[in-house]
Length: 179
Picture 1 (tube, rainbow, N blue to C red):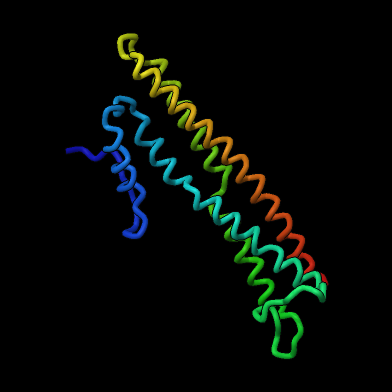
Picture 2: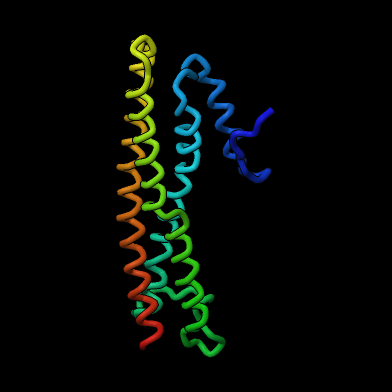
């Protein structure tokens, strides 16, 4: 038996096990060689990335108000020193953690993966024999291309969102470092 690929995961999050379950659910459409990679990509690009970005964006106003020193906003205790002044170490740590959350999954890297998968899908169709281009295969092929296009549009939105968040965090970091 020859090994042709490796799937790596943890017990808490095994993407491939979920993909295999999805693959079993669409067993009638297994004839397309990119169905499993597209399922794995969909799992990889799940809503977790958007949720992380949204959480970092919701965290940002607390940091901005604390750094800005506007007195009418509540300053969480974790940002205060025992003497009541702003704790710059805690603020810097929070900015770093928020930045890490915003940059968790880089959209440009994932966009490259989607572009390569789109190219592979086109190559498959171009090299498929005429008798293999049945109505069912044509429909499945079109749906795969639509799904890949959907992921590209989604990644564009995620990148814009995380870039704006990072710009705000950089401004706050500069304010903390250069008061």
